[in-house]
View 1 (spheres, rainbow, N blue to C red):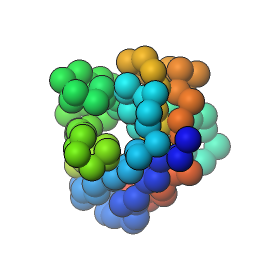
View 2: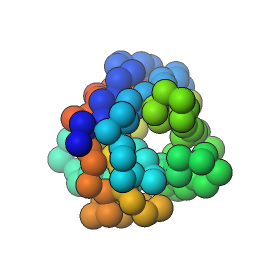
View 3: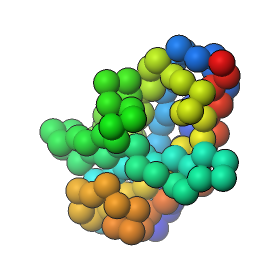
View 4: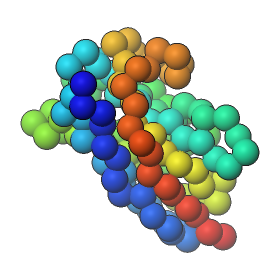
Length: 121
């Protein structure tokens, strides 16, 4: 299947905003899309997930209230709106798909290449 493609990363100052996009045209078996991130020297961690109906979402505690995940089904695209960014949000952000609604990386088998987000203080 065609892998998802992330875009929208970049550099921003603390307190700023970015919106990441994930084009998921090959998502045939992915009922849920998630965002994960990996900071230098750290393990990849869960950020947010949404089902394609858009009615169910979940977030990591570290981003709750600052990040919003959403879908545009017509465009097969998932978004991650990131507000009030902090230096600790600096990481490579990955989009991924799963058959199940899950926060666990092992349940995701449809991964993009990632997009870099850098937040300076």
